[in-house]
Length: 107
Length: 120
Image 1 (cartoon, each protein chain N blue to C red):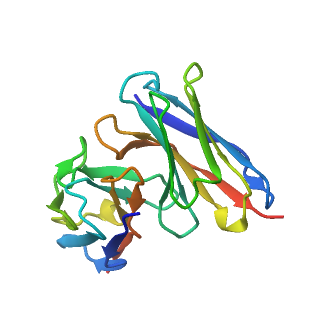
Image 2 (image 1 turned 30 degrees about the vertical axis):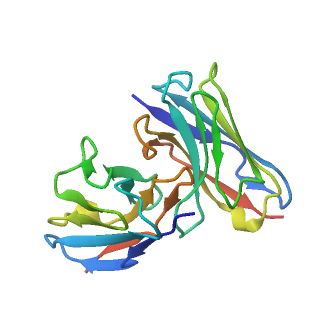
């Protein structure tokens, strides 16, 4: 299976900060990568698919980039509603795998 | 409007078989390209994909769990069923049902999840 490694595991930031989360794949996955946001007690919500395509209804402060083995999720100006845990997911192979998550906390 | 809802026992004993049902609306698994998956999340831990079933009844399983999992669908009832055999306390988790995008293999709609605890 393809292993997905996210960094950092926890990130402390303030409202208005630019935040970047990294996801690395153990082998090339082209652009077959999605990002999700999860709040406590809730199901994950799709933010980005195909590495950089913004899901309908997701604020434009969220953006994704990368290809091959290294990807980033960027929040251009952190808002109070953005404090949550973020997961990447690869879908290059039929055996789908998630990263370990990055928790974005209030500084 | 796509909605999904998981149902099943909240508590199972070790060695028992777990059966979970996902009842959905807003799409049909008899439509070409449609897919549904099960994903789980142990308390405080990361997400783990378990299984997927496609409109043409193709089935795909997690490499590490495939010997214990069976996924099936009932298109007349708009339901997807997951069974997991030989449950263990490490299988304690919230189990989610999700629609897998018709275009690519990401999850565009999720159910609310159901917490399953494995304990004697």
